[in-house]
Length: 87
Image (tube, rainbow, N blue to C red; front, side):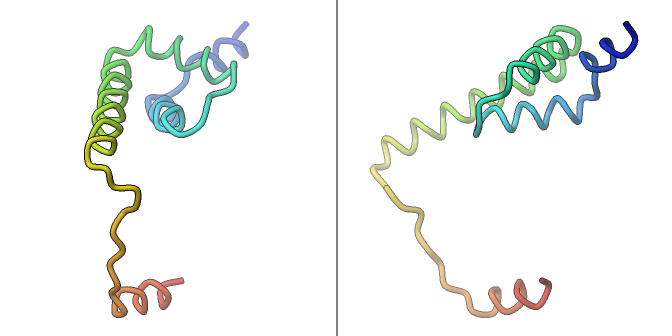
């Protein structure tokens, strides 16, 4: 029983990871259940999930209204060199 409970109840950090993952990829059925259990107990994560959905909706709406298919590319050679040097 304790093992099952540990699988269902996890940290807010893990919940926020699943919430963020959910906006990009579908969650597995197990992840979905874990997230539902957590957000039923944790109001902060429930609000985080609601805010994430709202932001996704607003960004989608903005993208549709702006009629921009591509994100503008900015060339910055100095920045590229710094990034490559850190790798």
